[in-house]
Picture 1 (cartoon, rainbow, N blue to C red):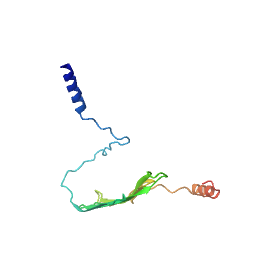
Picture 2: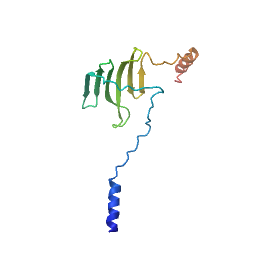
Picture 3: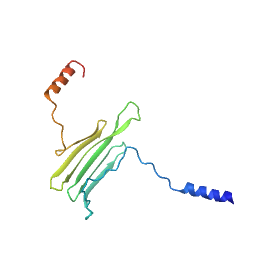
Picture 4: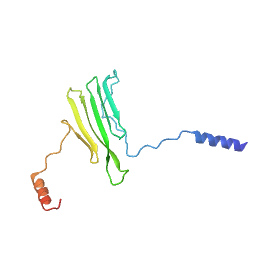
Length: 145
């Protein structure tokens, strides 16, 4: 009898759903203070297209009734010496209207050099000082760079 009870406990323990480990490096992003989400009427999607190809290339785009537009395309690229060293190179853009009525547009690329976004609203670094530009040119001419 004790054996049957122990077996029942073991069966219950094995049947208990297991927790999935959380992926490393991911974190929850909290909205800024004062952010209020609006759960108003759903926004209609006025167009949507997607394509997946056998070679791993893909593309998709959509546009919503509020003027939001998203486009993305990508393909597989060899990124290392081994045959299995394959990565995805993606490029795309998105645009939306900010709360103050300004159209925000971002173009981006994600490849072996990382994620690079451009947009008129994004900050840019200040220009390099002239003496640094000259020093780099001198180093390049000397064959150091």
